[in-house]
Length: 184
View 1 (tube, rainbow, N blue to C red):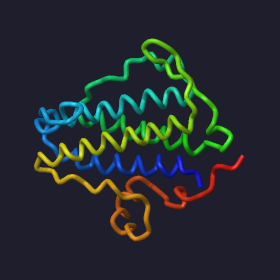
View 2 (view 1 turned 135 degrees about the horizontal axis):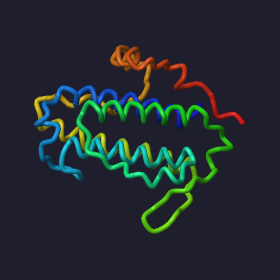
View 3 (view 1 turned 120 degrees about the vertical axis):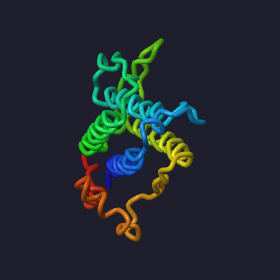
View 4 (view 1 turned 30 degrees about the vertical axis):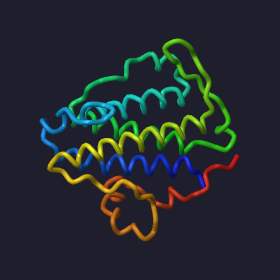
């Protein structure tokens, strides 16, 4: 199985679930000062998007594109649209991965240098980053009228009934999650 594709699909689903909850927030709750690494739900969600865009640009081999300033403070409707588009880019990237790609390195443009990172390690870092900051938004939601959504699920058979509607909304076919893509 392509573990990276499974993670990308789970990432897309978790972001959909989290952003669906955040869509219920008032504008005041979305931008309100909160305790966290970033000072608001808006700032945390925008940071997730910023880092996703930066690493995806590197993974796609666009060194010059990494010079773009990805740090925008977006109103929620635009943030949701851009995160959904970025999540799909990540799924598409992971879907084309082959075993031989995983050890290949890509260039990351940093403030003071260009560094090389392996694709497999960069993807693992990207997924960990997402999980970490989604958890922070989850905690911030606890201080609002919106109930934080369940985010610690993967695609277990016993939980399928709880995600069927979301899978339909995302056109997510679980056969895709478990299929073996990493040949060659």
